[in-house]
Amino acid sequence: ARFGFDGWSLRLGLNITTRPLQARIIGARGYIFSEDMAFVSVLTRDPHVETAVRRPLEKRHVVALSGGWDRLLHSIRERPVTCVVLDEAHLPPLGRPTGALAELRARFPSVPVVWLARPITDPRDLLGLGRAGVDRLLLVPVDDVERDIGSSVGRALGRGTEALVTREVSPYLPARSLAAVRLALDGVHTRPSADDFARRMGLSRPHLSVCLRAAGLPSAGHLLVWARLLHAGRWLADPGRSAESVSRQLDYSSGAAFRRALTAYLGATPTQVARGGGLTFVLERFLRRCGLGRDDRDGRSAA
Image (cartoon, rainbow, N blue to C red; front, side):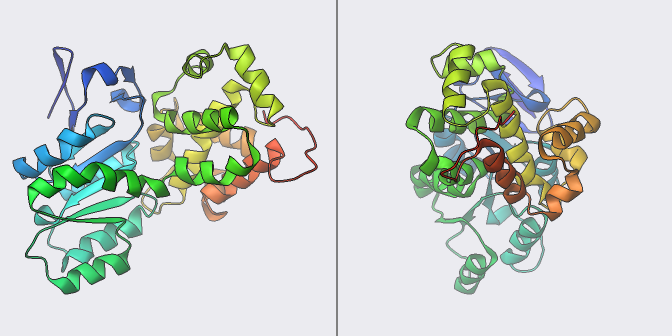
């Protein structure tokens, strides 16, 4: 697989496509991410489908093309994949098409799925897909895929970590602070520094931290750590992941460093986070530390 960027190429395990002017930040595991974060992994070997999916998505997202089922599962486990697009014509022989989705859902229930169904699909399979939990269903021909894939991925991402956390905290935050939370979550895989984060908000780091604290949030640097831990909570609840794989997804220097962050901010181990509800466990502690959701904020630091 090749990755081309501004005239040079790297050999990677997946075929990555991005728009050079919008993909300038090197993130976890050497991938380059756009500022509008989504890492979309696509399973297809059909060049027409590949083009129809890639062309509209690469304007805003990183697109990783997986040529096989095992490689797709590996990329979800080891990379910060935020959405999966499945071309049913290239799924493994796991019974009816719902068998593949059932395996994906069992191992990685947090990952939104967009399914590209062929015109010859048995209607009974389409009903089964809905029961199995597919997020968006698109019917090929290919011309319709290119027209609709962007909006379908966008809707599927509506059940992602960024969207879920934003909806939970939005009643308690002013617009600027809410935008900061969304940006911290959306760019977690790019590992921005606190200064970079503040610049994207159009402020200096000290000024941003003052604004965040006034809304009950942690300072800029600590908010970035919380954003990583909120993603970690969602992923730790997936049976197909481990603490080590999540630490790699979030680009921690080691599994031990990841566990130290969990202990320092949550007072918990990866196992306790997973058994406690994953994202719910982390989000409850984030809200409690910030004093959000209560009229009598006690002013405690969220650091």
